[in-house]
Amino acid sequence: MPKPWENAEGYHDPTAYHGTKNIIRDEDEQQKRVNTLIFVLKYITRLAGFELLNRIEIKDRKTGREYR
Image: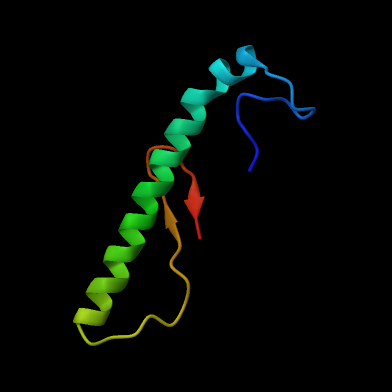
């Protein structure tokens, strides 16, 4: 697994790491929210006695990013 504080050659690159760590953290939090939402939707569907037939596609209204 690549280490975010190292560059492609394996040397420490603290400037790039400090510049991108907040972006990476925000993206990880967003992905966790999406995963939780999809899990809840699938769970509710099963509880209601239905079966999901296609992929779930959602769009974040704030950022406009789409998840499939």
